[in-house]
Image 1: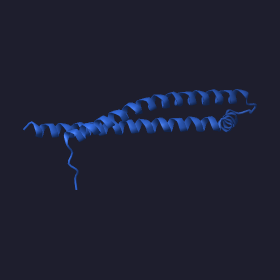
Image 2 (image 1 turned 30 degrees about the vertical axis):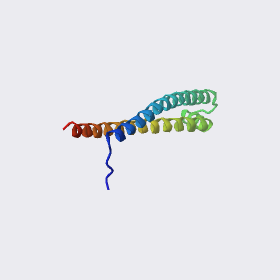
Image 3 (image 1 turned 30 degrees about the horizontal axis):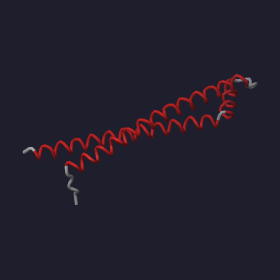
Image 4 (image 1 turned 135 degrees about the vertical axis):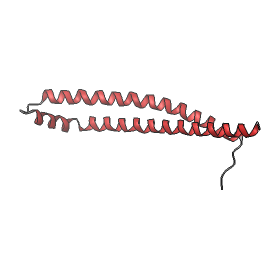
Length: 113
């Protein structure tokens, strides 16, 4: 059975979603900084590994650098994944807020008739 929502119910849900959206903005900012730091760390480590390699071919130097920088690469990919997940959560929250606004507009329309 469908739940009947009052205007107060919808406004409370919107307020909760607004709080969640605010928190997500802060988490996204932190995640973006972490992703940027992880990217820079990986690139620096990879470049240093390439430059310090004694291998003769480009392919060998890149392969050795990849092995040496596996931890940095994993950290970079993890930070990217967290950032993408938070971006998706933020989009979902905005979508839910939009839906609640539509419901609220429908309720207000019925009240004013």
